[in-house]
Image (cartoon, rainbow, N blue to C red):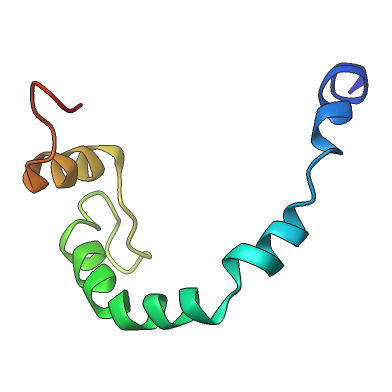
Length: 81
């Protein structure tokens, strides 16, 4: 705890995360975009989640599914990784 108080906290107090949320994240423009693309994001999640979830348990994206999703997009190449 002393390490946090002495070394990390002095840096963290410089940032106001709530201010960032109010000014940049919780905006009408972001809300419109979020609502517009939510069905696509939900479909991607449903397609790439649940491999390791137990029957009846909530679905989640495991690391293997996440990596496979990235590889399936084709964005990883010799010039972009």
